[in-house]
Structures are given as structure tokens and as C-alpha cells.
Length: 136
Image (tube, rainbow, N blue to C red; front, side):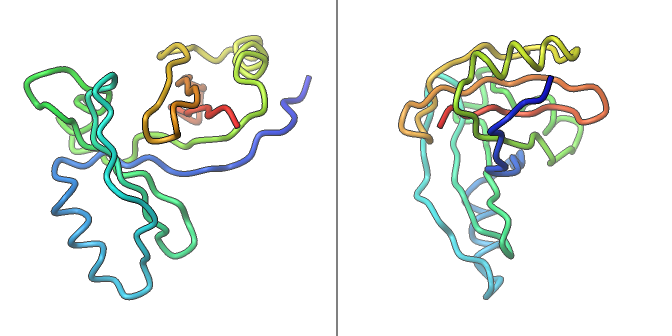
């Protein structure tokens, strides 16, 4: 059983200070910021996207550091890599196929502000780590 139609979208990076990170990265002449900053209250995160030498990168900071956010544990351990994201035509079908192959759903489908309220979900895959699925 193959998972047709998956398409790479971005790499998610956890950051403790989004403004400082954006300022630092903008000093690279070849890097072009490709988005504004998004505030997603439902996930308690601030997000911005950048095209870093041809790779789309999502930079994620907790919105309110007094509340839980998806990147807290990564930042506590000084781990910046958070996830890899793939677009899919059918979020539910892709989740079902990945679960059949042993993937664990860690965040059920929710609407995401940074993606015009399209649905996303997070799954944990053995040997690959956390992936995000984004409905096209």
C-alpha cells in the first residue's frame, strides 16, 4: 500500500525568540522571508516562514510561554528540529494509511491559522520522527 500524492512542504524549526531568529536569518543575503508572522492561539504558537537557500522553513515559537505549546519540550532540550511537513490531498486517508504502517497520531486534525485554516495533523513515525500532514 503506497501513500500517493504526498508532497514535501517544509521543515519545522523550534525557536525561543522568533524576532531574534528572523533578524539573524535576514542577515543572510540569499535568504528571503516569505511570510508575515502568524499568531495561532489554538496551538499557542507564533510562526513565520522563510525560504532558506531553496528550502521552506517554518520557525515556531511559543506564543505565551506560561502556557503549553507543541515546541516546549524541544526548546527545553535545546533541540531545534521539530518536524518535516508533507501536503496531502486527503488528510484522513493519509493518516489511516500511515497508522496501518505503525505511525502514531500525536495531534489529531485541527485547523491551522498559518495555512488559511486548512487542517493539519502530527504523526510520529519510527526512524523518521515527527511529521506534519497538511491538507491541500
